[in-house]
Image (cartoon, rainbow, N blue to C red; front, side):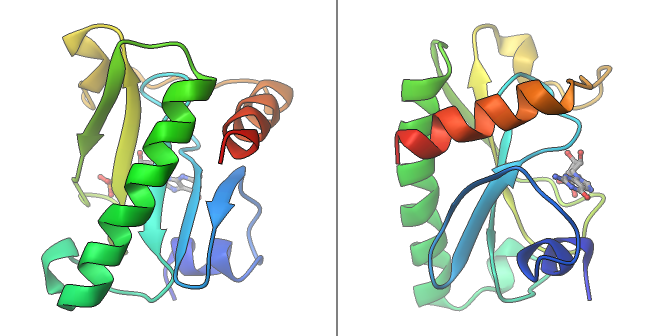
Length: 129
Ligand code: 5GP
């Protein structure tokens, strides 16, 4: 079971932003920018391009809803999108509020925000869903 499956199952806490029957969105624990959100299929599949067609398209449709809510909740120029999967073998789309090109640099020092701030950001995005 991946760490993300354990989050979906509620075994590990997360700052949940949104969920439906098949997909789940939550804040990245070490964001590259405030509001950095991960969008995943609940079903455990390692690689994005291994998803079957319906689930793949559904994931992107769900990610777009989350991105619009994120953009409404966190002031930024636009929402950047990345798919890496170098760390967690459970496919996920990174949604990152961008103000500069450098905000999407995953090699730089990540942020560690206080729990109250993470909670407040997640609640603000969820309220825009
Ligand atoms: P990737 O697999 O796309 O290279 O990176 C995985 C991402 O998941 C990283 O940005 C990392 O901060 C995030 N991450 C790893 N473990 C956890 C976790 O337990 N909870 C949350 N919310 N994010 C995690």
